Image 1 (tube, one colour):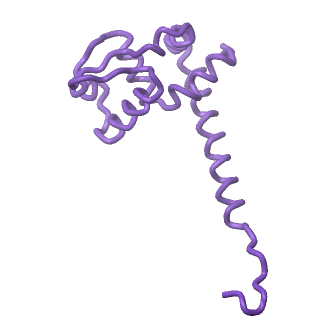
Image 2 (spheres, rainbow, N blue to C red; image 1 turned 90 degrees about the vertical axis):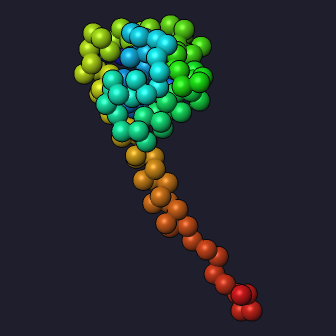
Image 3 (cartoon, rainbow, N blue to C red; image 1 turned 30 degrees about the vertical axis):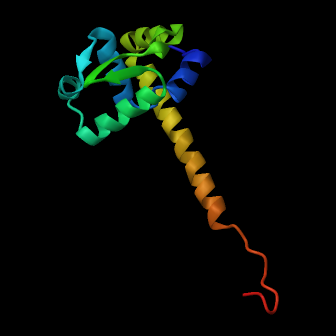
Length: 129
């Protein structure tokens, strides 16, 4: 199933990992929910879970208050519904898109690191310290 460019952009900007996707999906099915109950349900390591929830809050996809998490305003975007429907219909297509996003980010980071390693300094002139 081919994914729309809007859906791929949404994945890239709001949900760029499987952990975030599973959190969003779980909240779609059951909200509000206590953070500790959601983490236990998804069986995610605490650091990974906290990082994913924090990123989802920053993207506007979820809201946390007093240990409770719910979907945020960005979840009302049609693309969120499209993503959830696509994930229910063809998880492989979503997994492939997330993998491609991750690989593109790794390529960008590698290229940046490589170019930073070869930044040439101006030759020093006599008397420069």
